[in-house]
Amino acid sequence: MKYINFFENKKVSKLCYGTLALSNLQNFDTIENKVFLLNYAYEQGINFFDTAELYDNYKILKEFIKDKDRDKICIASKSYAYDKKTAEYSVNKALKEMNTDYIDVFMLHEQDNGNNFLGHYEAVKRFMEYKEEGIIKHFGISTHRVEAVRDSIKFKEIEFIFPIINYKGIGIQDGTFEDMCAALKEAKEHAKFIMAMKIYGGGHLIGETKKAFDCINSLSFVDSIAVGMSTIEEIDANISYLENNELNINIINKIKKQKRRLVVEDYCIGCGKCARKCRQNALEIIDGKCVVDMEKCVLCSYCAGECKDFYIKIV
Image (cartoon, rainbow, N blue to C red; front, side, top):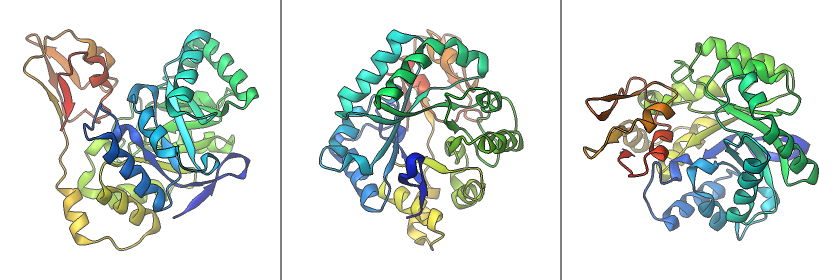
């Protein structure tokens, strides 16, 4: 496993386990099986894990870390906190539900630009207090926008950037792959830690995973790569890509056959909450029902969290 220097010389795996793939937004397997996958990944050397309040899977992380040396594991989380109260709620929820004394990285989720960040600044100030207390070790943002990466340079509070990036630019809302690369390169020059997300374009690049992985892995300004993995084969494949090892042909074929899609049940009442949530403009209410444009959808599944009747699923 390839390791990198995190802050304070802590060593973390360059491959980060994105646990959205283990949330009920995308995965209805048992907690035991999900924890098994995390343990398997850890045994292979992965010690970096990304989650979020939205994913509602802290209990899985709790079970995973309960019998391990916490200081050898790096956990990143995020929320949409916008003021002191919501910041406190988010941090306390994460600490309690994961049964941990601290969070290695806490981010503001889906930031658009500097103005958006300033609109959440009451929360940021509270996060900085948590950082002074050692409850949050580092602070950052996640984003699907080039503008947010560029604007991050203006804020010393932002140490960590978690942007969407893949070689086709799928899911980047305000530019191209090249635009995002230029912004991230500048951010790296200002000592920001960069962790890439959606390198497979939400499943659109599943037929060319090695090419997609190698592209992002070759970028000198990318420190870490987060990948959602829901099977042992996916874990093995991404580790092989990272270490440039030969991958078993059976695993390659199995992964290529995986065709995931967003499904909206016929019971949909067309309330529109999911469409308003979608940053990719992939959802539209037509004739009182939600309709999905899979050419735009990146399978983030955030829309599913808006549907209180669970009519939206990834299959």
